[in-house]
Amino acid sequence: MALTSSDETDLLLPLLGAMRETPRFSTFLERLRRRTGARYIALLTRQGGLGKAPITEFHAGDPLPTGSPVTGSSALFDLDRAHYDSLRPGRVYALGELVDHDPVLRAQRWRELRDLGLADERIVRILADPGLDAWLVLARTSPCSASDSALLSNLAPYVAEALRSGRDLDAARDSARINAAGMARSGNGWMTFDADGRLVDLSAQTQTWWSARYGQPPRRGERLLGLARPVERGLLSAIDELARDKAAAPRPVLLSDSPRVEALVQRIALDDDPAPASTARFLAVFALPHAPSDDAQARLTALHALPPREAELALKLSEGLSIAEAAQAMGLTVETARNYSKRIYAKLGVRGKAELVRRILEGTAHMT
Image 1 (tube, one colour):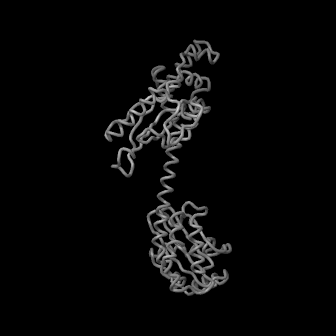
Image 2 (cartoon, rainbow, N blue to C red):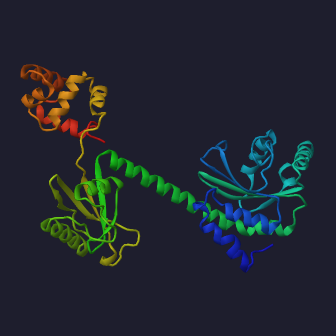
Image 3 (cartoon, rainbow, N blue to C red):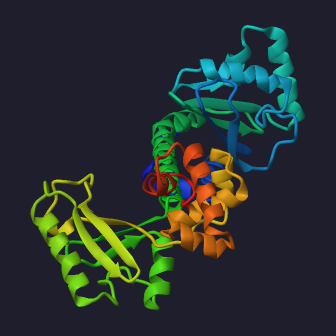
């Protein structure tokens, strides 16, 4: 059963959106089941380098009872898994080929298949990539035909590419989430602009802060509203310089004077570079104004063994207060605050207030 022109629409096209479905591959598998008249179609995937890594199953058709070879809950399926790893990618295997060396096991497998109301099965190993394996299984209530095997064989490379693309997209998405979480935790924000200074994208934290600061969220596809004229000119000038010179160093610009927010603007290297300057993208990264975390004192205590009052004083000093001002804010005498500060300097291994402030600002206390 080779691929026909209608198969390209009915079977191959759903693979393009298979990774966006919930559950994944549901449209493709259901159409394949209808195309073949099979009772059950399953796509089994395994990520990880170990043969005993968990297998994820996507299927179409009536769910097989618990204890079936496809669900992975029976001892027989555990035996089959060892066979699956030995299958050659791209070749379609009949059920008998998996256990033809053992008459007892073969008879047991046929009995279990009959108990499930099935008569035959075909299996093709789609992928045997490092860290990613996949098998496509077709089970019928009547004997499988040569056309079933031909169809599975023809579909295998397309399903393999869909799985590889999905793996790469998942990895890119996970990396983006981790990077975004790291930027947010460190108190940094970002925006991207096109060559005309129009906003392309921004982080969620930046949007929240900008909306609170200027009374409205920045709009993608438009220039930033609410900027003072000198600030807007500085931003557009930096973008223009970077657009004309790919080798230009990042440009510092002022985004807000109260509270003060300074940004570093750089050209982003895109996959399609060299591209026209008009299609370039520019990234502005900046520290967002924020109060110390509610956990800041506990973090100082955990890392530097500071008692709560000493940790509180250290935070006050890192926020720019003098010892006298911090003492007044905490209800301490200046002499007591000075004694606390000496113990703080000793425990943190710093020589004075300046080093203390730098140590705290570079640590976890001021992370969000």
